[in-house]
Length: 236
Image (cartoon, rainbow, N blue to C red; front, side, top):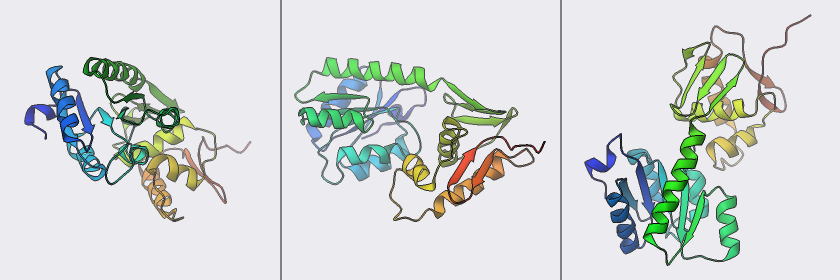
């Protein structure tokens, strides 16, 4: 459950995803006592909906959910950007721990657990990810501010949607490298579109209208391979 105070913009918001109601409520109560805003979800589908409505800064995620495996849910929660994830689960096997961190989890806590330790680990992850989110990425006259999630070219704000921002960020991170449509799908959307890459072409077109309009083009098509962010080569 989410209260108005949980959703206040100046409060760090945490989404607790666990189908065991008693554990979810226990963790939520402890986090609210520590000053966090908290929402809970008992299924993967509820969690995805909460991502849109609650816009959390971090998620505490169980693996054994009734509808979507927690390992599979992680990339869907991160569809439009980096979301720190702390796994909280009864699965304490080394293989599960390794998988949890390999798929992108920021920490892994097993049940039974200490509330004090869980809160300490959450604060540690928030500190690390907050420091990382302050970085700026740049290529040519293009700049991306991770803290504000804004992109500018020659100082002009581009006004990108979340998906356009994620796509441009991926291209800036890999400037000069040709990216296939499948690579872009896997990284930006984290979904299997059954081989249909039209969505990539559509969003590249949207992005060009904002990034390259009236300026020397940076988003180049490499026929038969994909797309690359690079300055247009001038004829000698």
